[in-house]
Length: 264
Image (tube, rainbow, N blue to C red; front, side, top):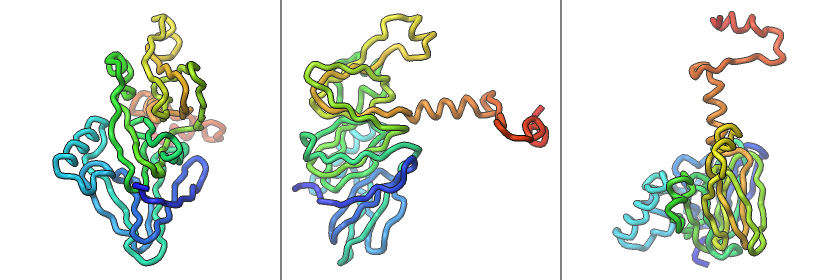
């Protein structure tokens, strides 16, 4: 195997973290800021580009880093290596409520395509790059759907998504329409495009966007029930600074609490 053969344990339910067990000299790569805790003997190193850039020339690393910039990610990633003589553990936490999805790339054709912000960590040797969709319209109307991340290799990778995760196996020719923000990942065989809703009235008054993702099988698709952008919109809309109102549901204080807080 090119990627390191790591072991892992998932902890928690709605706010999960993944604990990865590393043998001596095994490594795992992760986005900056994802580490939760690590045992003594594990060392951190910042690398330029993606996790497969070790051993390549500076130009190759620069190209890899430039691709990461297009997805809105940092130029750098962090490698955690067990430099001790015994097994050691390092843990990575989910950034918001949802689920961590372990994927074995060796069982998925050595490549999956995922949302640019869903990658959490992976065995060293897994390449994190970008995947351009074939149709330009996908870029103009699909938002994050045009430039998606691709994970390539033969090791374990871990994705994170919000709410409940639904895994769907698409048969050849079977189509599935998904809100663009709800798409988490798909295998490389799945054909992906952006489709117009068809009726302006439906888009504006139905509460949905003008476009959604159309996925055609065969292949595997992962869908999230609560995209972070949707959660953030609700929080911002309810914030007092944005005109929202804090309501003490079920509280005996009710309006008295508002008076104590200085609200009219």
